[in-house]
Image (tube, rainbow, N blue to C red):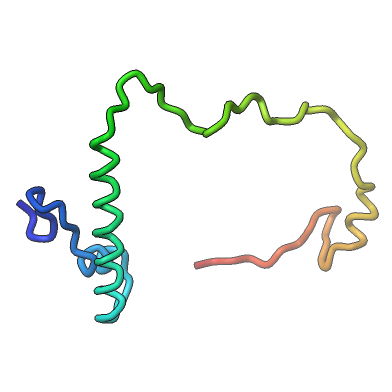
Length: 101
């Protein structure tokens, strides 16, 4: 059994999770977040007690039908006008700064 997570108590150590996420929490923040996490887990436990037999899973509260617009060609901007607004252009294309990390 992992020392940071106990299945018996369903307790998650906020400091350990913060360490994994490379977050630095102060003592007050860790205490606050631990309490909030425990409240969330208690709410989930209550939801697990509900009888959902026969209830179909849904992704939305109301039925959603095809919400995409029709893919129809429309007039676009003139290429020369667009390139006139570009801060830097070369050979009819935008020039953007190179980013290397």
